[in-house]
Image (tube, rainbow, N blue to C red):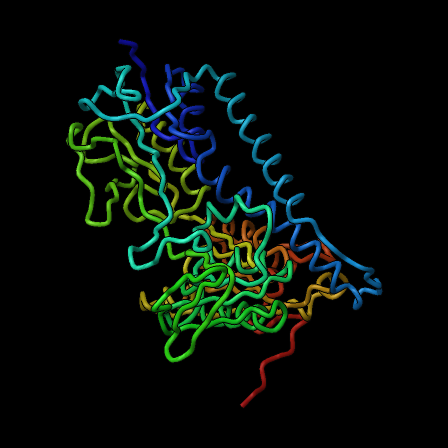
Length: 462
């Protein structure tokens, strides 16, 4: 029976970086992946969706370029070619992950892993290996409730990514991140889209002003019908049509995309044999060091309780778990985890939201700057959106930030760094930003906290 210092279960954005980091630290490492290196993120999530979004955004901009002095011709697109390019991008990146693992001397086992005991694993039910330390990075899968009928035109996100032809119309069940990203991509390519969300609004993790900006753009610029506050009921698939009831209104389309969340995947791991239990929701509990309740077993990413379900968070956890498993000093997980949403417009968040800060009883100040007052945004024809700081009113420390608009997913990293470094709004505002850029909106918003914004109108005195 072969023995490894570290065995990683799962080759996704948390698992494969953990394996590489363990090898860098001199450990003998094995990685077990049941399906495809890179996991959901690379194969059926982040990368393929963003590849398709890149194509849909370009097509949409080309079709609405009159304001930039460009006269669009007879624009068209080939979705099968887009899908092919998506597959090529995924294949190239997946090959790169395999090469990196090989270069670092990581032994890769294709198949499933199950615990025999705390330090012993069975691969594919046949081959036993011994593990000094184990890191569980098994990820999550889409949730499809039992009340949703089974039909060829009722699919979840992974199945959607296998399509080579788009429907003319579709209902998206779920107004969260996954549902909204797919809705935008399809709408940009001319699909008639209806989003149904039973909560009071879409993207409820965001502050109300950001949600308002997104919803307005969805409905006005993309023609997406957004229905909130009521569930989709009485779902039926007849022939080429899916229909359902939202309150008293009937909605129908060629396809229904179910995007109401994901659940942890621990099937077949036999966690009990290692002395591990899961929560009522199926998650594995960990401490701030990624340690489970069983010595020598760590867990990271979507499978853990309290997971943000973000690839970059899983990557960070993977490195932390390995360094704690191997190194003499304990390292806690990073507290600052920025997030990004690739809708149209894009969204980026870091730190406390305005709502969370208020909930915590913190006295705050807000500094906002709209892109409509930004030279680069005006020049680029991208004036939708804004950035805002959430600031401690007593200390002037930056507590949180949200950005909505062009390049928000890139802009948010500056905000995350500033918050992590515990900068004040004054310090950020005094940092010279290049002009003309979208990034200088952060400087303007920081000045706005103190009523010193140069390119924003002063607040009216009462």
